Amino acid sequence: QVQLVESGGGLVQAGGSLRLSCAASGLPCSTYVMGWFRQAPGKGREFVAYVRGGGSTYYADSVKGRFTISRDNAKNTVYLQMDSLKREDTAVYYCALSRAKSGPYYFMSAYDTWGQGTQVTVSS
Image 1 (cartoon, one colour):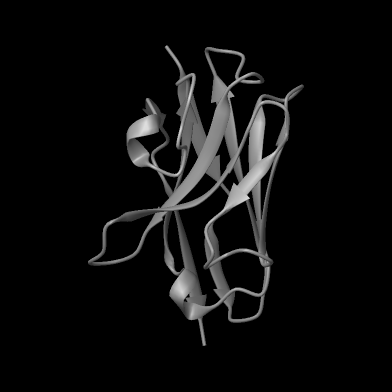
Image 2 (cartoon, one colour):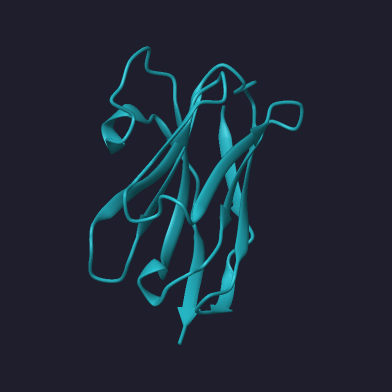
């Protein structure tokens, strides 16, 4: 059974940085797409970024230039480096795994396994 466990969330001031980690177990994920989504209070879950097995990346416009997704296949782990954080980045961040052969991978429906989420709170 595949499990994804996020870590690294917390409270940070606007303009600060955080790095989220997502450790996968039960399946080598190096060839699959891994993504990050987030859900703010009272809102639906939205796409943040994904990384393909080969390392190519794709970002939501709202985070482009501020967030960086990466992966360490030896550790079966995906990261989300978040810089220049804004209050509107406050949300629960979820890691997800897609074993779909084709996307688009910015849709939740492309993902079959989800982590439990980690809270990120950005204060002014």
